[in-house]
Length: 416
Image (cartoon, rainbow, N blue to C red):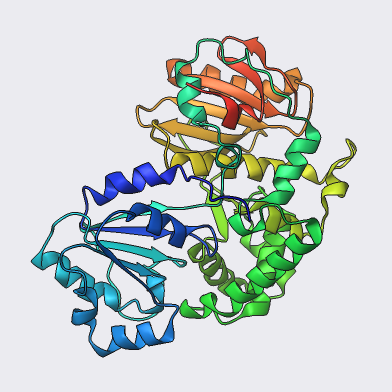
């Protein structure tokens, strides 16, 4: 294994610890939550425990109050706290007695609001830090904040990169799990298979409707086959051969385990025919590729028609990662109406301005690629900050005022 890569969420986590009594790091298994927690308390008076250990869980159950008060003058780190969700009630009571910032640092591989048992949201007492897999900037050691860069650069199209289609395919196949860095494909496939088996067979059982491993895997495989596509629940239920009235419960399990991301529709009432259906995709690109039983070599030919959805979801995932540390506050959506106008990604900034992104697995920019972006520009006027076609070209391009083509590598190689 290479040296530990610095995570861009370290600075964010430290800021949160300085302001809130508790910070909860949440994300899927093996994205580096435990490592991040240890980095955040390095040099501080801290006690670190993990509830993956049976003896530690026994101690937590035996006396919850004593367990959460075992580091009164420092910070208590509880790893995988979803294993004993009732501890959150004891943590809440402890915080109400002493609201000093930085008392608890918790990690969880499942959404704590959805696990079985008595629990508490810690609303007003805790901040949540979502940790995802390694971003491309973290892997390469580059600073990255694409949205802020696009806001401040006057000529964003003056960008070039040595990245080729082969680089993008390799990045999709590598994914973002720290443990798969440097593994040859066969070992990476074995790791991904074992990883998914263990998460669905073990962690999923902590959640309502989480005891159906085969059905959960079927739903994930169908989502991966339609990576980045709109979520049609009836179609997923039919493909997985499960009752339509249960599909929402299975999707909730996968979301709660942070295996699947959803993009809500952007419905600003620009037209009366906007479609309010979410997009869904497997969060890690390597896991999606493995679920499809596809290989890197199958995506390399220019004639491959299976890379489009994978590439779109890969770009969406990178922007979701940057959302955690970006200097710009933004939310992500997608747009489509019944007249066929669509835009893959709509980023709404906190001041109401919009960055629209169309993702194309192409090395050329064509006028038709900008159709949806032009539509939004005309409808939004001054609210429209920029529209970008993100693709596999090696150079940027200005199509019109506030409309650009950019290599996808600009997401993690552009600097402010």
